[in-house]
Image (cartoon, rainbow, N blue to C red; front, side, top):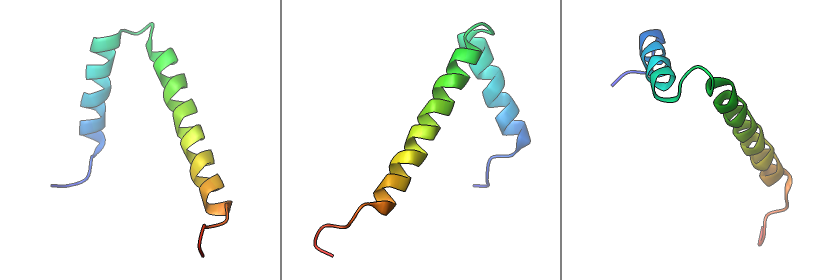
Length: 54
């Protein structure tokens, strides 16, 4: 089991393109970007919050 390389990423992107179509890809990309941003913000906020009991 190795890491995901360029050929695997290309295959995954082609499957997504086939499933959702070219028109929906920008919407999906925007949603994924916003989700990643929210996750990073939540994890950063969690690091800065005081720990209970410590």
